[in-house]
Length: 384
Image (cartoon, rainbow, N blue to C red; front, side, top):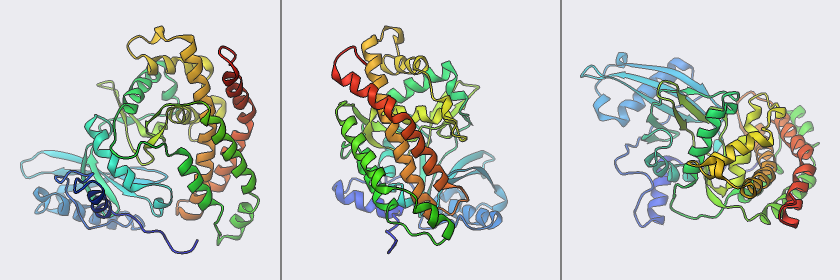
């Protein structure tokens, strides 16, 4: 793929943003920084030693603690990062826990870390996600959220559907400084450019890759971009990756959390909702679980009017239904192209090329129905 694009570090990001904002950094000056990094390829015992050293470097009050005061355990290993829970016995006897998030190797090809760090401060201030406590070369430290990760079946629970919808509306109302231009098609075309110019060392992967009809994919992307442009969908700051793994629930306090804003950007409202609905399929990608119209309407009611959900008009419900299910197609194209890049760049043992075909084929299966729905809606009121 030629020269490797520069990997943005936390310090690069802050310096660059300070220039753009006349010295006003996107990360609070009070947030500790470290020039250290943690190699995710290390064995776990060696990684633990590095994480302890990192925590001591970031947080002065822990600098002189014995290593035995720290315990480190894996919280989860995701597609794009590794989460570690670090528990610390402080000098005064208090037990404190933080989350260390290590960015996955090569994720800069699909994730804009500069954009993420710019947004996280404001989202945290609005009550979303964990509090940012520190940044380092290849990750960040955040407060630990005492909650469980949702499952895909949880997302179908009517009570949680209503709460997710209400929280997503509030999320969409957060103002993030900078350009408000929607990034969907910018990102998709960037993904396409990268995905269509790869070379695989693995001969079997290269043979599969060569069966992808990129000219056809480009035509589909262009056609869908034109159709969605006619819908005049509102632009909001979107999560863009609201799957079950990025939703947490404290059952004791009945509190829902949105986490991980790696893909967050200004984007179309319908994309964020449609992408969330696609995640009802779960990690097994069973798209028969995609929500029915009635299930979607439950979500829409609580999204559009959280205080009076059953006073939402049929016209408004229908309009959001069309918007969401048209942009749902864009979600399939987005993650299909993302998967091709991951197939080449990610060290994770996962069939990313197979995932491309799964998402692209689902796009093609749903296309005719969703295009017809949108075109009928656009042709006149009450005909969708």
